[in-house]
Amino acid sequence: MPKPFEILLDSRDAWSSLRRRPVRSSLSALGIAIGVVALIAMLSIGEGAKQVALQRISSLGIDTVRVESAPPLNAYAGIDVANLSLSLSVADAERISAWLGTRGTLGYFVRNDEQLVAAASRRALVTVVGASADWLAAEALEAAAGRLLLPSDDARQRRVCVLGARLAVTLAASIAMPVRAGNQLCSVVGVLRPKGRLLTEGTGLSALDFDNALIAPFRTAPIPRRGARDRVDGMLVRLRSDASAQVPGVAENLTVILGDARRDVTNYRVVVPYALLNEARDTQILFQLVMGAIAGLSLLVGGIGVMNVMLSNVAEQTREIGLRMAVGATRARIISLYLCHASLLCLAGGVVGLGLGVAAALLVQVYAGWAVAFSALGLSLGPLSAVIAGLVFGLHPALRAAALNPALALRES
Image (cartoon, rainbow, N blue to C red; front, top):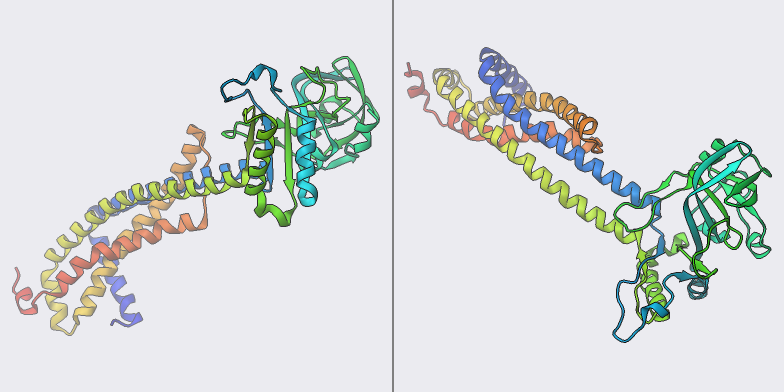
């Protein structure tokens, strides 16, 4: 087994040998660099897609169950769907709340998108939400100024409202200022902290921009009501933090409660972010494995090129190998020399590929609009995989060099 200082000497000799053949070494390293570029770019694209998916699901809350009204999807024969309620209702929310008990919070809402609101001389098109006080708590909304809605606001039918952070700036609104929504005035009692958008792509839920919304008590919200006054567009159940593992079971029971009340006519949509999170993780793991395998094929091709170059070097350096053995070099030192040769060659390609891979991923982000993200593991995996490829594909040429007969090698012309 070569000693550490002997490995350093072999590395120096290997580097000198590479510098004597710049064109051959550069082309061989280029093959490895291309494989590393593919690996870094694909892993960063996969990591970016993973973070986007997790951000979307996290915005929904992994300890929540969301329900929204939807057109009826099915009905049993003989049932007149027209006579059934085609939306969720306050009565549904009360049944679920009674079953839920103290395990969590349930809120409900009705909404109207692109409604004109005005304050003084300023106007804006916003989403107007009529919500129960528990809905704001379930959405984890916080007040930056003033207060949130109270249960008494709804019970006493007060004409008050809470504004999103961006809407308050747009209207230059302040606490106690009157705001007109439709044909109704409401007094501002609070302004929300910036919350951003509810990211719902791929879930079937409607998106909601909290920062550009006006939220009023459910019964007095300035929203044109279609159908029954107790109709709701959606409900949100948020479990206590110590009960989040019960989310799948809660979702199943909630579906049963709603199904029984509708004789199994599915005119609602249930979304469980907890299940979406697990599904997204499994999908991303598979996605990254597939992309890593594709990039691995590029490294395989580059490694074969390195092995061919190493075999050529061994053939050209037969007399040198024989001379080393004649003056006392062991077979282990010969193997160490050529493994260092292959590893340095691949490491050089790996370092170049790392820089080009980062640049390629950023170009994809700019021109294709795909999200990319870099992780310490992904960035270190490129050069590391290049060195491993050098050791693997350099082993056969190294063993071949060590197996040469010194006497025959010295007679080579």
